[in-house]
Each structure stands twice: as structure tokens, then as C-alpha cells.
Image 1 (cartoon, rainbow, N blue to C red):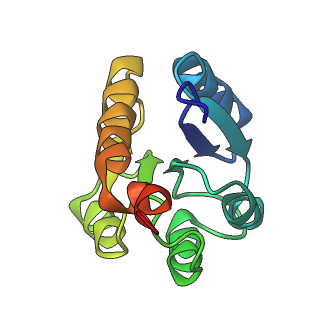
Image 2: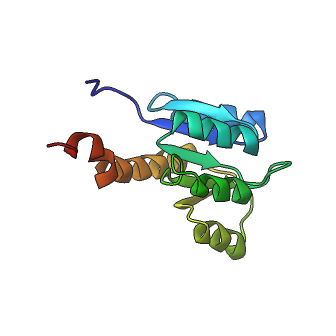
Length: 140
């Protein structure tokens, strides 16, 4: 059993610079995967089952809201916490995301410390949740 396994984060943004900045912020603490659009996010989330997803809302072809709807319909990805990271800042945008079951919002421009704290807080919740212990509790 590998107790040193890093949590995984899937960073999704259509802007390469934003993906790189987030990877630099989180890469020393987590295994970071990156996607640049909605379809690849859905595919990667299903394959990798990351511990948390940082998801941009405004992207071409498929926006973050649509990606989240698809993730929530898939048995393998429906419980992955999604944190929106976006330049949108209206109350309505945030309410829409939370209504779709996003767990948090990070507004651009963001600070490195804010991103680290919010991701860490979410992962602490996930690492303590009963679902994370199912492997160990089945069959006693």
C-alpha cells in the first residue's frame, strides 16, 4: 500500500498560460493533469478519476457548466468535486455553478495562496469522507 500517493488535480482552462500557472502553483503538492477543453476534460476525468477538478467556465465549444452537467451524469465522475476557476464574477454565475453542484468558486485573477488553500481544504474533506474508505471497509 502506498501511503505517499499524491492526490490528483485536473486543471481545465482553454488558455495554456493559466494551465501552466496552476500547474506551477499545485505541482509540488499534487499530481496535476491538464485539459484545454470540455471534451478532453470529460474523457480525462472518466479515465483518471482525479481527486478534484479546477474547471474554467468560459471555453469554446463546451463551457464549464456543460462539462459539469456531463460529469454529474457519469457514475465514475459524479462524486469528483469541481471548483470553478473563472473570470466571471456575478452572483448569478456563482449561483448557477453551485446549483449544478460545484463545490467552490475561485475568481480570476487568483492568488497562489488562495488556490492552494481552497484545493487543500477540498482534498482534506475528500480524504476524510466515508466514500474514500469503501475499499477498506468492504468485507471488514
